[in-house]
Image 1 (cartoon, rainbow, N blue to C red):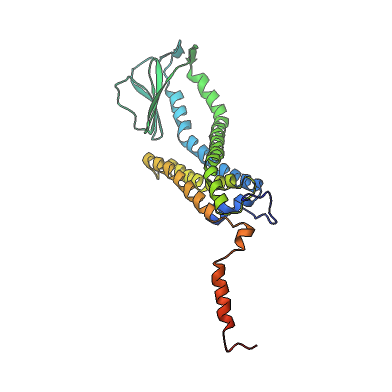
Image 2 (image 1 turned 135 degrees about the horizontal axis):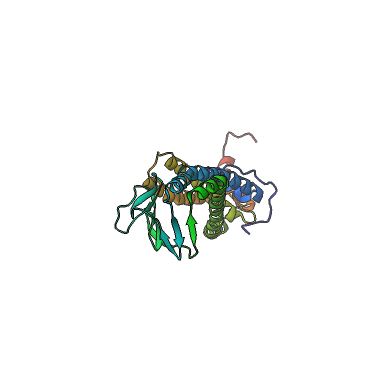
Length: 283
């Protein structure tokens, strides 16, 4: 049996940055994994908050300050008085523009284009068109500015928390998928794991990739990495998880019965016979 319910000694697991540390989570209590995930999730939440405060928050501030007087949304159509093409917000992260279909794009990495019947969000990977709400709304600068100023200190942490929860759920789901081949390897290689050991190993193995992605987002926000580098880091953090899963499975200890059999028993007998023929050995 390759997955016993308990062992005589439960290891202390806290370091998911080495293969041996990842392997230790397989036989450690579930609470140790949750504590480590919680610490890394907290760092992820801080990074998300920093990104939002540097990108979307200034974009919304500028948009409210530049919105024309008399703007309204009625029947799923946007009415903005003035020029058909103008920038509501434009930084290197997010650009919000009121523009026609053939107008030049913003230089921002995320482009929000406000058209008459719908709005578009464009990124490096393409764009998506979304409809406006069908209700009637009037945009008054003197009303929107104080409301946003009062609520943004709560909205930014809430959005960052929602993104962090999605990341944590992705750890759970990906670990459930990756654990199936690991369970097969554990069974045939006589490796020692406790209950849910394969899933815990895979969950811990995903954490180094999460740290890599958080560092990439931080570097991108600080202007030390372009959006193409951020996309590359996103793909690479999956590979890092796979490497840690494989190396962690190799680093798992053997079952006690399997660990007692070491080397070739016939070779041992042969060595014993040779030692018995030593004429200089005292009887």
